[in-house]
Length: 294
Ligand SMILES: Nc1ncnc2c1ncn2[C@@H]1O[C@H](COP(=O)(O)OP(=O)(O)OP(=O)(O)O)[C@@H](O)[C@H]1O
Ligand SMILES: [Mg+2]
Image 1 (cartoon, rainbow, N blue to C red):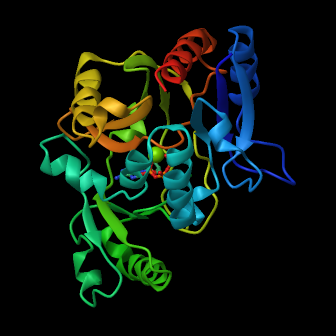
Image 2 (tube, helix red, strand yellow; image 1 turned 90 degrees about the horizontal axis):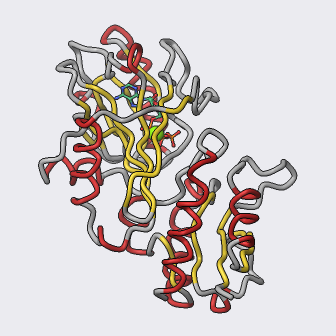
C-alpha cells in the first residue's frame, strides 16, 4: 500500500479552511493508498515513513516563510516531496515574476522596491492607477490599489512594509480584471486539470491592512487557447519544471486583451475540488503515480 502524507496547516482553534482534504483523502483510500493528513510543523510527523508528501494547504506559511522553506528542505531529504523543496524556495518569493518576464513570458509589469531604498517613493507611478503588494504573501495580505492622487497613502503603505522588512511590488492596476476577472488554470500530473475564474479582489479605497475576500465570485471557467499558451510558457520557464506535480497559473488580461501572468502558485494551491468534483480522480491518479516513482 503506498503511504501518502497530505500536508496541511494546523487551523486550531478554527476548523480547517481546506475543503479539498476530506474528499481527497477518502478517494486516495478508496484507490488503495494509505493517506494521512499531516501538519507541516507537526514535530512528531514521521516523514520518512511516507512514499510521498504532497503539500496541499500549508496556509499559515507566508508569515513564517523561512521556517517553512527550511521544513521543505528537511522533509525533502526524508521522503519524496511534491512540489520539491527547490521549487518551494523559488516560488515563495514573488521576484519570480521578474524572472518569468526576463524569460519572455507575458507577465503583469512589475517593479520591486526593497527596504533600505531611500528613493523608493519615487518608484510609485504618477500617471496611472497601480497596486502595491508584498513579494511574499497570500490572501491579498498587504495589497492595495492607488490612484496617482493617493500618493501619500501609498508612501505610508510602502514605509510600513519596509519597516517590516518586506519588499514591495508595484504593478499597474490591470483594469480588465473589473470586467473579465482573473482566471486560475490548475495543472496536476503535467496536464490541465480544470480552471476557475474569480472577480476582482481590490476594491478602490480598501486599506492595505484590511481583510479581503480572497476568491470573490468563484466559478468554473473554460480556458481560452491564449490563456493555455501563456500558462504553458510560464510553467516551461520554472527551474526544475519537470519535477512539478501540480501548479496553478493565474492570468489577467492587459489593455491589449492578451493574458498575462499575475501569479504562479507552486506551493499550496487551493484546488477548489468542490467546484470541480470530476477532477478528483485525476488528482488521485497523479498522486499515486508520483508515489510509485519514489
Ligand atoms: N496588478 C493588479 N491589478 C489588478 N488587481 C490586482 C493586481 N495585483 C493584485 N490584484 C488583486 O489582488 C489579488 C491578490 O493579489 P495576488 O494574487 O498577487 O497576491 P496573493 O496575496 O498571492 O493573493 P492570493 O494568494 O489570494 O492569490 C488578486 O487576486 C487581484 O484581484
Ligand atoms: Mg493570487
